[in-house]
Length: 111
Image (spheres, rainbow, N blue to C red):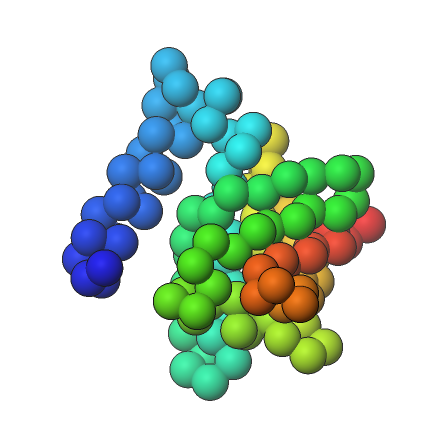
């Protein structure tokens, strides 16, 4: 996929989260993460699907070999912020790849 197509899709998803009609439903499964690139030092925001259990948020990465954002959280991981329930939450994210090649980013929200 081209960056233009992906950017358009991401913009559409963020707008859908903000819509009066669909926002509440979509926001239960979609959040926007914000992080700083390890190499570039630039700040990025992107919509992702998530599952939350208390202070733990799991983000399954679809097509991990195509996407690069999750690589900022390999090894010891790094800081991240998420929009949950209309509020910004800071946390620490760590990416892990399982033996089947699937990648999950696990975020422990700051207390």
